[in-house]
Image 1 (cartoon, helix red, strand yellow):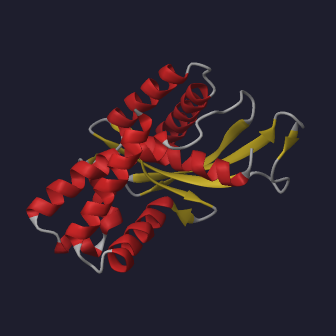
Image 2 (cartoon, rainbow, N blue to C red):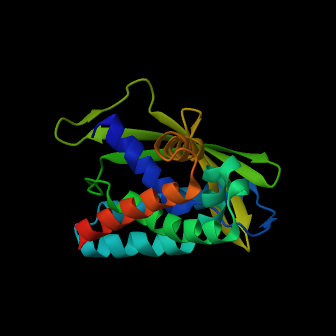
Image 3 (cartoon, rainbow, N blue to C red):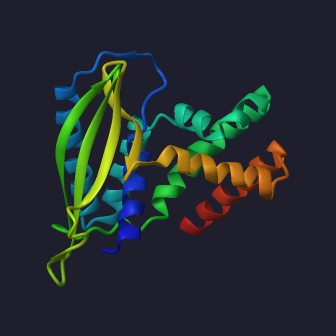
Length: 217
């Protein structure tokens, strides 16, 4: 498995685990560490399932229950969120839901059993959030060689509790935030491709969703 494929896989993890916009309640480091380990193992089991239909259904179920689309959508829009009127915001939030769905459905979701493992190294309290530090190891099953001999790929899940539910607020890979990466992608689409016209940007986003949805049918 190539590193680029792994980064896509981690992007999927983030999509499936984004947090809720509701007011956060206290979360302990021990709770966050236990949850991160269990949720990571669950997703790996899903991705190694040979039943593609069951795999898609389970991933959709996790996405429906665990993604905070409102929080993610507002964050990646950044300064442009304040420039949008109510109608544009409603339209954007609706299409963003589908954009997230096609983002993970377009990935190669085939994962060979034993090709990926991870360790939870530590959990550090950070106000009402907990930073869960992980190391991910990738093995080429055919050659039995573990990639990145330097010690695995470092990732940090920023975890919160909302309405008694533990969820991820952000994910950083080698100190790079995926939420920031999504924001940079959208800023480019708005400024360079749409001349700062929000409606044009929304048209493009809807076209991306429609084209990918049609291809899946």
